Length: 327
Image (cartoon, rainbow, N blue to C red):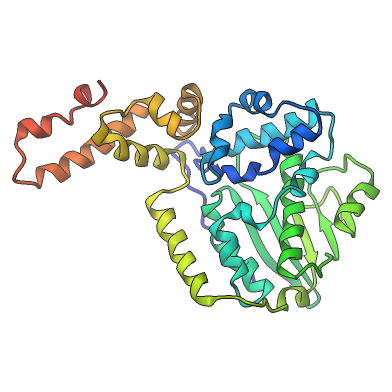
């Protein structure tokens, strides 16, 4: 079964606008850094990630910042297997409701397919598929659709380590892949990777993937609740529509929310996104849009709604002009 992905949303200049991921991606980060003798708060701030943002597991944070954080942490702490160690600190719970959908599927294969279908809730930049390449071999692939981040080895190894742990959880612990494929070159001895994955790990490949048997995906899941699965899937679908994981749409969502409170400034919106004001400004610039443009667009939408309300006077509607709104 192959999961086809729609083209990622881009602006006219071709800049990807999906540079967001749930802060649960950094579950266990503080604990691991502490074990290695480092200062997690300092490393987070250097990566332009507000440490307070990690208190909420579902907060959207910059995926590029996370990738750079993991690379810099491995370097500063002299820990070349940092990504794999992070994987040991995490489990299916980092996916939130997407993990619950998986756990309440009929089989391991159904669970992986369902989580792939809803993975945009976790991050629009994550690409994965189930590729049945032959009668006895299936590839569970993983990639990241982000421009401008060349060094991402720690994030890829974290993701592949987590994929392994997800498969073990779904299989009740009875799972060992046939092989693991990774695109980057091997930085550590093969024995280190074999110790973690319990199989051969091949580097310099054309993709990142776990190689599994079809029978691994056919294993039924015990105690699956199809009703709960449907309820959670509806929640995820509604959440992705009402609160999308997209920089421009996230800002527009917050602008609409803050409109009645008269607190719609760049700094306030950045605080709600757990970003520094300059970081948010830069990311909007990368997407070729200014904060003021989003404000004006939301204002226009709101003004059109107000114009349809006969009970409101023009003086009342005029209060939504930018010079009033941004004061």
